[in-house]
Image (cartoon, rainbow, N blue to C red; front, side, top):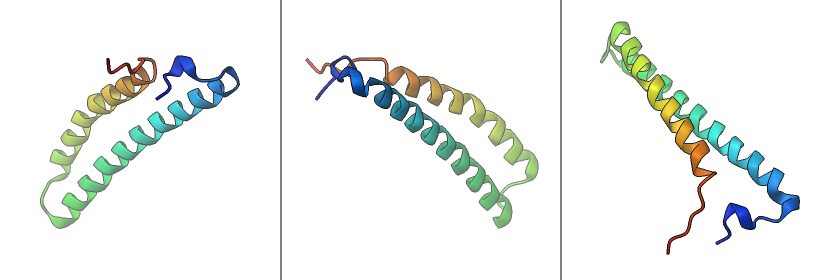
Length: 81
């Protein structure tokens, strides 16, 4: 498996763009999942609006942490040995 430092120079920009795209997709999917789950709980009558707002507030730091980890994961070389 190639590490990021072994990517040919002409593909380096493409690889970085794809890493950013994947990070954005992961974060937006997580946020959409929280929103859909909250709306489903509200529609089913399992939660009040106040509970859903608090749940959403707690998810924001987790989404930020996920973003930081996804960005950093593209900067760390994977050497299993």
